[in-house]
Structures are given as structure tokens and as C-alpha cells.
Image (cartoon, rainbow over all chains, first blue to last red; front, side, top):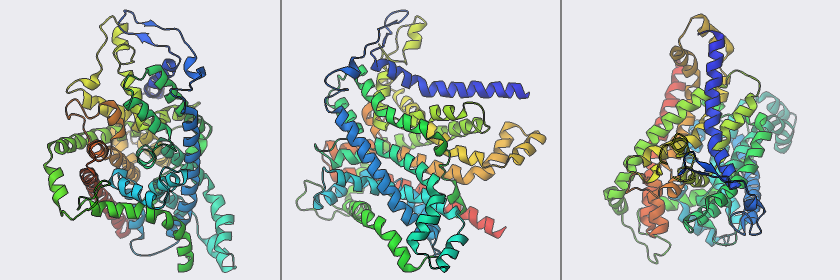
Length: 275
Length: 292
């Protein structure tokens, strides 16, 4: 194949993939403005756009939607920061230690990240009840941190194991404290990787369903729980309303990823294969 | 290297969160699957392997396990293939690549629950995307395939691939970018076909990352339940029932926590087998490299 033909094939295939990604979302965005086809007519007719899903007095899909959006954003941010901080310290300890089974422990983190929450969710809710943390922000924050930390430790270990340790060793020899080395040498070098990992953790938190579903009852409610609620309890839910809720809950993540896409290119699972 | 005291100092904060909120519940959950423990059970007692025998003999669970095997095999293979192909197409820089990458990641940002809601409506006969094209061509609109015997499972697989293939692309792209340009150039000079380029250039250096991504995707597919819950509820019949959904239904809809926990630990056991193979394969590879 000539160079030009290869180029055309590449553009065509990527175009197709972008279309497949965006068309379902564009359809949803249109539906949120009540722009819907009627497939029973030939050719299908379209309804004109309306804004009422976004401007209506009852809020989007239900009166408490904005509250749920704020809850989800706050919790996701707090969980991401706590997970990053704790996992960074632990991953550093693992990356700067040599003991038998260390590699197994790191790979074990990856496998623990795949543990289905269902396997321990009821004892977990028992843990929270004993700590008087059920249905609270703090309880959900700690529980979600525990769910995501194994993945975070695995990924951050990959970044930290790559950094050269000679400078750190030299600093320790000159009497620098652990805190000084971490803050002045390790953190600046690991910052892009930390930020990229944080972004991925934020998305995973935002979309987490089972943990908030079981650990909260009325005080704290996140978007996926709300969405499943109004879908399971009101089977007749109107599509444009659901579409508006869907678009609004997706938009913050889409904006974040668009703004930070250069940073996201730094996210990688690869370095761990070299341990 | 760090001193023991420093190591403890670094590991303790995470340990304080993981001990009560992961290790204890997981250990307790595993132990409880050998008892009749549940939130409504005042006096739990030991039942040995009773729960496991009951679940493994349960017709619904068996159907779910078979569904899960097919679902995992098909979705993970498709997600890796599509992910690898798209990452390959994105390898060389071009104007607007950043935006294309963002567009290709968007489906993964949709939560599994929202993904179920989204596709439920996209398959709607009167207003959905699925039956729009036939209607445009003058045919009668198609009924939602989610309620049709034989079609529901393939459609569920496709919906999962739509959401997860973007993640595979995203995770595989840095691995492809890390392959030195000289190797591509050499392959071009040698006149290697695309298949042979995949075999001799891509796979040798990408294999460990491919295995890691496969492990994450397998974990996700084995535990699949939230999208299924919204889209089909496991139906028609048990055609789309997954062990994850079965476990959820047992624990939270019929309040049979032992059955729910036991089936979740069977998913974990399957995951453990996959994980063990992964660790052994990785170890074998490192061993060979050290010997070389």
C-alpha cells in the first residue's frame, strides 16, 4: 500500500471509531433538549428542542439532583486526595525496600484491585456501623479510599520504582530527613504521574455504585445511586429527563479530561512489568 | 534503602484505613461464607462448605457462571483487539490527535449505571438510535433487542465493549508509544506484513502491559452487574444473568446474605485463578530474562 492509501485508511478507521463513541452521547444530548425522532413514521419526524429539563423549577430529573451532584463532586475530590496521599507513602515504602515477595506483593495489589466489593460489602457496612460512620461523608470517604487504594499503590509504585535513587541516598547521607527527601526530591518528580493517577481515581470514584448504595440510606446520596433509584423505582421514567441527568453528570468529567488530556498521556501501568 | 522505622511510618497511614475497611471486612466476609451469618441472623453458626454446595448446585448460578465465561471471553478479547487497533492508529502524531483521544475516551466516563440507562433508551423502538436507521430507510422500527431471546446477551456484550474498549485504548497507547521508532523502521525495510509487525514488533515489548490490562478487564467483566441490573435484570429468563447480579439479587433483593456472599467469593476464586496465572506468567518471563 502506498503511504497515501495507508493515511486514508487510518483517517477512515479513526473517524469511524470517533463516530461510534460520540453518536450515542450526541443522541442523549439531543434527547435532553427533547429533540427526539418518531421512528414509527417514514421518514422519522423530529420534535423541536425545548430547554425545560435544564431550566425547570424541580431541578434536573428530581428536586435533589443538584445536591447529589455537589455530594458526588465533594466526595470524589476528597477520596481522590486521601487515596493519593496514603498510597503515595505506601508505594514509596515498597519501591525503596528489598525483601522476598516484594514483587508478589505489588502484583497482589493489582489483583486486590479486582476484588468484587460484593464479597465483603455487608461486613464493611458492619464496620461502619460499629464506628458510628454509617450514612456519613466520612464513612463513605474511608470506605471508598479502601476500595481504590490497592490500584493506586500499584500504579504509583510503577512511577516511583522508575526514579533514580542515587540522589535520594546522597541526601539521606547528608542528613536529610524522610519528609525533606519526599517533599523536595520525590514529590516534584512524581507529580505528573500523581496528578494523572488522581484524575483516573476521580473518575472511578465519581462512577462508583455499590459502595455508596449499601453504605448510605438517606443523608448522603451520590449520582449513580440516584440514577439507579429513579430508574428502578419509577420504571416509567421519561427519557429526556434521564438524558439531562446523564449529560449533567457526565459533563464535569468530560471537561476535566479535555483540559487535562496532556497530563493523562503520562498515565501508564507499564513500568511495573520491569520489577 | 529505608530503615524499618521509616518503612513503618510510611505504611501505617494506609494500613489504618485498609485494616478496618478492607482487610477485616474481606477476611470476615470470607469466613462468613462458611456460616449462615447475615444482617438479620441473630445467632450465626458454622455450616462448613454448605453454602458453596448450595450455590454450585443452584441452576440459576450455574447459568450465570456459563454466561459469565462467555461474556468475559468475548468482551475482553474484543476490548483488547479494538483497544490495540485504536492505540496503533493513534501512535503517530497528527493534527488534532489530542481531541481524538479525548473523544475516544468519553464512553468510559459514563458510569456503568448510566451506561445501562443510556442504552435502554437508545434501543427504544419509537425514539431510539437503534431503530432510527431502519426507519430512515422506510422499514418498520425494530423492537428493543434487550427483550429478545438469543439477542440480549450479544447486545449486552456490545454495550460493555462500547464502554470498556476506550479504556483499553487509553491504557495500551503508552506501551505502543514506548516501542523505539527504529524497530518500526526495520519492520518497514524488511517489508513485514501488518500481522507480522504485530507478532515481531508489537507483541514482544507490549506483552506484559497487555497482560496487565487484560487482568483489569477480566476483573471488570467477571464482576459485571450494575449495567446488567439496569439493562435486562438478567433476562430474558436467565440469558443475561451474571454471577455479580445473582450475588446482588441474593444479598439485597431476597435478603439471603450467605448466598450473596458465597457467590461473590466464587467470583473472587475465579479472579484468583486468573491472577495466579498472571503472576506465574510474569515470573516465568522475568526468570527467562535473568537467565539470558
